[in-house]
Length: 378
Image 1 (cartoon, rainbow, N blue to C red):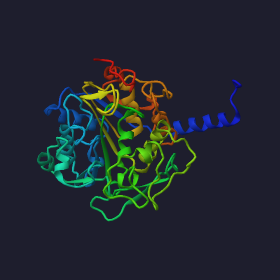
Image 2: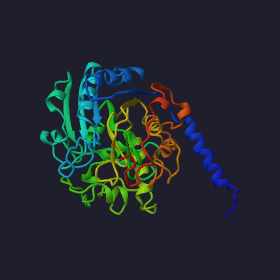
Image 3: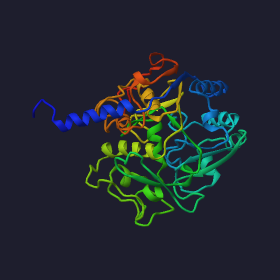
Image 4: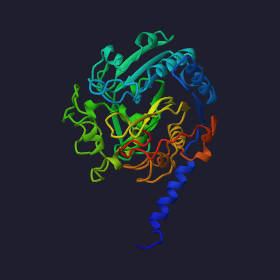
């Protein structure tokens, strides 16, 4: 193989550089937060003030808040020693702050099993339903794993055209809002390497249309997760739902999952990212991953641009934000930060991101080599 680059490679590299340079930058704030107690409310308030305040995002608006409640608690009950889901105290503090900032309505959303709307299903995750509903604003809850409270899905297009899909059919809640907030955890992901804001959007796809048992006509009572449609691409979405752009593309999770995450991050952009790194896990996204273990970074990170926030988070975890596949944390998949930047969603260039609060050096925590399938700290 020749050591020189072809004209096509040079043009591709130039295009990527232009896209990265043009990608928007946004301030990200980092703070030390040592416990889920009363101080967390003030810490989160300070962080939000450092990025321009919460009122411009939520005042007078319906705010959809996407939680990260990964893993069916029927199979994986809440375990304090493995805090990989959005923490109840963080949700309460965020809702109280949004109400105080003038939010008209707060709609808490997530896609989970079973695909029903009973409130006791939310309570399984340890959420204090009464306290949240008394936050000072009207609070609604919707499981977005199917139609939910609506009669039809909303089609949301991928503005840059998409890597895998050109558009997605989603629960109405992702469109019927004035602001969209992502609440995620600071942790690794088995395939994507890291899972904060961008990967959290993977969960907005309803399993009724993107689950393994969606069938040709959709399935409003899905039992299977997204693996066959999303990870492996061995199952098509139902008829009438947008189909893949390139059915000949690799049927491999490390290729597909990062690109699907970027497609979804573009289709439903996040207006505010709140990343909880007070107590979390490393080595994977949940207890089903071999080698996961608890870590206590004692951090909270917030920002307005999902790519910039996730880039800072990745650096805080001790990783090279621009690492290629095969290097930690991107052990099994392509780097979704670079893919998102190339699509114009935001910059992952740390030199262009203004950081408030703690510096990267002050905040940096050793998350180890990534999801390698074994514990490294215990």
